Image (cartoon, rainbow, N blue to C red; front, side, top):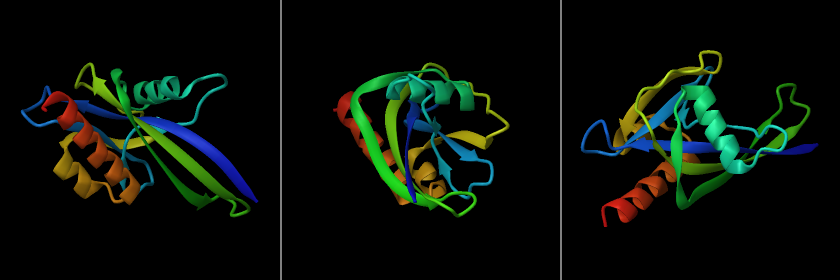
Length: 146
């Protein structure tokens, strides 16, 4: 049986740490790859509210969502008991961080770091997340540095 699920997240960025744009990447516990904060909606939460709540919960960061950008990808995985296939859709928004200080949610996140795109792309091994970062970087450069 296939179960459909959707989660929402934020690609947090800052220009405060150096001349380069940097992105807050996370490595979840028991995950081989780095990614961005994301999670499932609670009750009547909308997509952006979910993404911002997950950002706050996972790394204690607040951000301003940048209009006219989102990146969506899908993948499948087996449920923990291998009885179901889960088809997951992920929507990532772009968010300008209000601060560079962060604190990880230790129950879910192993570590996090502010990284320029080239370094982040080396740590992110999932192609769809790499593509999301590349599109985010392109959007920021076209909007802010055109």
